[in-house]
Image 1 (cartoon, rainbow, N blue to C red):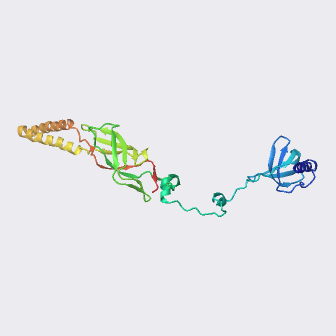
Image 2: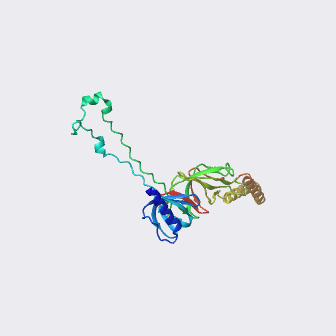
Image 3: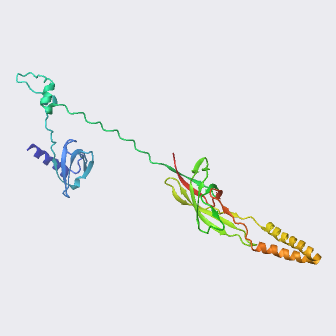
Length: 313
């Protein structure tokens, strides 16, 4: 009956006294407010003003409710936790004579007879958590255009046996450094192809062979990457001096033979015949071929910058 009278008084204080500065209840009381939209708000009364009241729930969250939206207010009793006996008294056996006696520890025979009373074995120790592995860090290094790559050719190419687009392979003979950092380790593979293979011609046309690398196979997880390099070519030596010697030698021999047989006129005719024979030899003989042997050192020049990604150690 007393609580009902208190709730009615609280409702009258909220709904009818809009100009009051506070409710007729002490702050800290637990109340439940029902709003006009049917929503109820419960909590501890923090403050009450003429235009609004403020409640705080168990989580410390405050809610402001305008008085114009309040239809009813009622107090909320606080639930008291059930009383519990002290742990020591609840667990300690009570003697019939009124004197508590300490229970002697069980003997070995008692433990053997009653396995339930035996102490449980020590639990295995949980292994210590392994330290979290640090994610690898990377940095980029850019080799500028014009950098020379020291390459060893993997297989032989020749002007008379190789063909355009035949694949070629090479490896770095030593590491390539940039700003004190090893950008490309020794043994890094380069891939390319034959760009030209010109046979030696008869009288005119010198033999030549050319290769170019357009891919690099970076070690580790780098994978293959495109590169731009200049063509490495070889040109056969000229044979003009040797051809002239052949023609001149033939003319001289013809003149000697013609002079013996017919004097001056015979010498002139012999020279012409001998020179013609030397020329025929030159016309029927091809020039020298040219090739690049396996393992030959090549200086491959980059024609565009090359950026490689390196793991920071």
